[in-house]
Image 1 (cartoon, rainbow, N blue to C red):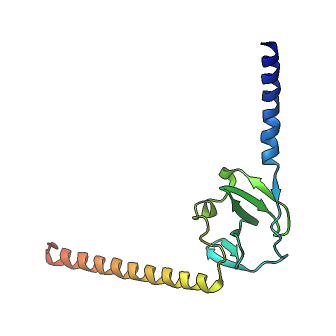
Image 2: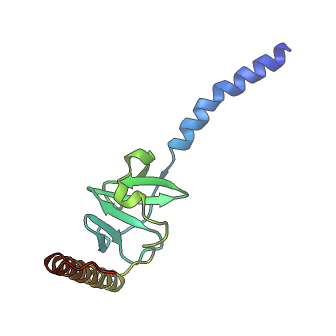
Amino acid sequence: MTRLAVALALVLSLLPAAARAQVDVNIHLGLPAAPPLVVVQPGVQVVENYQEEVFFTNGWYWVRRDDRWWRARTPRATFVYVEPRRVPVAIYRLPPGQYKHWRKAEAKAERREWKEHEKAERKEWKEDRKREKHERKHGHHGD
């Protein structure tokens, strides 16, 4: 019984070290010193046409691997693990893989589609307000 207790104590004493070792893992991406960036939303850019999503926001380069986030101040620096609560919401909520191999042409097409969508919504909103105003003025109710 004493042997079992000693073995269990030894295993339990090693667990914190194993957990620390897991967090101390760092990664290098091999990016160029100044990779081309494409704006994907206000305040968020992604490295253009790269094999994985590398975002740039709030002065940091960010990469997600296996649902973990890593960051570095420069693209050639060592990326270190970041707790999920410290990852900017703007990139944390992005679906994985959406901006992999992203190109400027795709970004332009996406912005154009968004602008068209916004324009259509504004037009619909204006038409609704105009119809409501007309109904109030003439006492009609839309049935």
